[in-house]
Amino acid sequence: MKVSEYCLVGSRNLGLINLLHFEYQKRTSHSRPFNLTSKKLDFPVRARPGTSDIKVFSQILFFHEYRCLSELSSPNLIVDLGANVGYSSAYFLSRFKDCSVIAVEPDPENFDELQKNVAPYGRRVKTVRAAVWPRAEKLDLNNPGQGEEWGISVRPSNEGTVQGITVSELLRVSGHERISLLKVDIEGAETELFSSGTEEWLDKVENIVIELHSEKAHAAFFNKIDQQSRFVVSRCDELTVCLGSGTRR
Image (cartoon, rainbow, N blue to C red; front, side):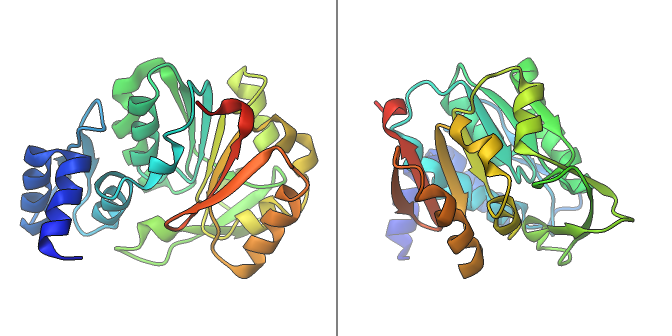
């Protein structure tokens, strides 16, 4: 991307002052977490030095990854699977003023930052330290290392340190009857999630935005979605977007 295009995109999505602040923070050597801001957020968010947080912020806020959801009309419940440090949840809470969010993240360090970043939104958001899974079983974390905190994945293990939680259970504890938007970025676990058990909850999901991490994940997902003629399917950067015709403007 040319410098002029970069500045145009950043100014449009972050705001000029926030863009300058973002560039300054990227180039500064930090020893502790620092704040980042965007005109698309109601409150600043924290970023940890030496982690993938800057990359995640850039993807979600600088490049406005979820612009594909601009057609949604007043979503009620948003379930954020793979919430990482909370930038996507903060964006949804800022963009859709009347929505509630359940943010699910398995990694303890990411989860700690998630809680801090969504705290200003109060009772509109519930955080759950768990990994979405077709069954309520123990899971192990696979951490690819420092700087790749956005790529943490899970696998079944009897000695696992993370609890798997089903979409049905998340919907139950939410107190809502339906999920307005299901956001899924779970580093390959979508293959397992959509391979079985969706019959209990998929009919209660009105819209889906998902990152599919493999051909196997793509096949498992579309095997289920192709049975749901109510979705209009499109692509937006790395995301597959499934919008229900009754939830758009």
